Structures are given as structure tokens and as C-alpha cells.
Length: 332
Ligand code: CP
Image 1 (cartoon, rainbow, N blue to C red):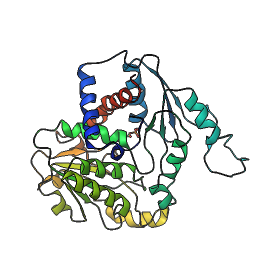
Image 2: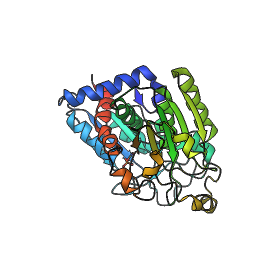
Image 3: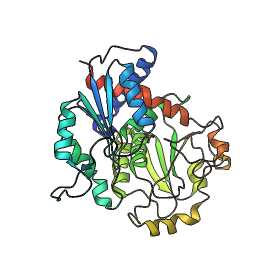
């Protein structure tokens, strides 16, 4: 494996192998596997789980890591081409990225969506511009429309659920004070489609996922024996559901339009997961969320604190998943 930027790039067999490797590394640690190796982590956006799990994973495999947060102790980075750099950014990614890459054995990059130009964000323009400058194994730590590390941890979390693997998976929009990126919903719908699940995207009017994301997921589902549908009918969507994956995201129809977005989401305060959402779901239906989650805005205390919630397990699984990714990229 040369890079880990998209589960779809790997295919189902390799994702299954990575999930199995993550489980193996939990039970049979390899504390010297990556001795002498160095991981660089470039975070253009905040993180708790991704940053901490990457550093912990590298240490547990015997390697080391460092974090660069541009503008916080290091130079601010300019990513635009052809600009006169007389503003706050002192360094261009054209120099900064190859320099960083030359110090490490693998580099992880987190670069969220710009949030203004949907076409550019759907093409993951910002992340891809940086990826093109890196001649080392690369890890996508969340880009505009992908979060493969989260998706692998979620894959493992679903592997751990009891019962059949062909289950009804509902990805539901939930509310948030402002628009959030499409990366996790895009990665999640694709992950569940690759598992061959019956995936339902539940969202209010105005919050349909962009067509390219849905089409790509439908294509994966067709190849893997599953389905991908969408609806605004909460009761129908949740009937017999085995997994409810709650996630906040912004409206593609009002992309970059803060006022329009607010108008759309203002009447949607009841899109907060409560116990009664599970009335017609399978009795063992679990609640997933990638975290961070705003309690009693996106998901109520009564659900997050109930046995249905596997959100902490998901977050824990970021660590063995990260170990598996690093092991596969860097173990000689
Ligand atoms: N789920 C996730 O990626 O969490 P962080 O943003 O804290 O890394």
C-alpha cells in the first residue's frame, strides 16, 4: 500500500485485511514494528481523535511523530497558485510540503473543505494540490469529501457488532448551529455501501448529499450487493434499522451561503436523535457518530448515555485502525 487516502482506492478485500490487522495489533502488539520511522502530521484544521490516535499509534509501533499546525509556531502556508505573497502566509506549499516530506517516512494531512466552491471541494482540490507535492506514503486525515481513517475505524466497529453483516444502515442528518463539511457523510455512505449494506440516507429537504457522492456510493453498493437510497421520511427510514449513524452537514444547495443555510436549518431543531427515533428500529439498533458531537443539539443525552451508543468504541477504534494503516504503509 503506497498511500491511504480513500477506502474506494483500496477495494473491499484490502479494507477487510486492514480491519483484521487492526484487531490483530490489539491482541498481538508489535512495539518495534516501526522503530526508527518518523510520521509527520500536518493539521490545517483542529482535531482531537485524529491527531491523538495517529501519535499514539506511531508510538505504540515503536516509531515517532511530530505535528505541524501552520500559524501556531510554524509559518502560515499559502496554497493558492500565482498569488503575490504579501499577506500573513510566509511559506508556500510548493516549498513547505516537499521540505516536510523530506524529513519523514510518511506524512498525514488534514485539509478541510474551503466551503465556498462546491465543485472545487467535491474534487478535493485543496488536498490533492498538497498530495501532489508529497513523494512519501500519504495519509488523508480528513479532506473536503473524505475521511478514510474514520471510515476504517467505523468498518471495524461494525465488524464488532453481533449478528449478520448485511444490515440496514441509516445515515441521518442531524442539526448543528452551522454548516459542517461533507467529508464524513461522504466517507460513511461509501463505507457502508462497500460493506454491501442496505444504506438509507435520511435528510430533510435541502440537505440531500451532492449527486456525485450518492452516485459513487450507489456504484459501490451495486458492486458489493447492497443498495443506497435516500428519503426525508424519518419513520420509514428507521424502520428495522440496525445502525443509525448521525452526522451534521451543510446544504449543498446553499453552499457558501451562510444566511441561506441558516434559513434552511432554523426550523429543523427536532433533527436531534432522541430515544423515540428508535421506536420502529431493530431492538439492537446502535447509534454511531464520529465525534465531536454537540449533546442535546445533534444527539440527546438519553441516547448518547444509553447502551445503544457505540460512539466511544468508534473513537477508540481510531487507534487500532491508525496502527494498521501505519503498519501497512511503513513496515519493511
Ligand atoms: N472524528 C474525528 O475525526 O475527530 P477529530 O476531528 O477530533 O479528529
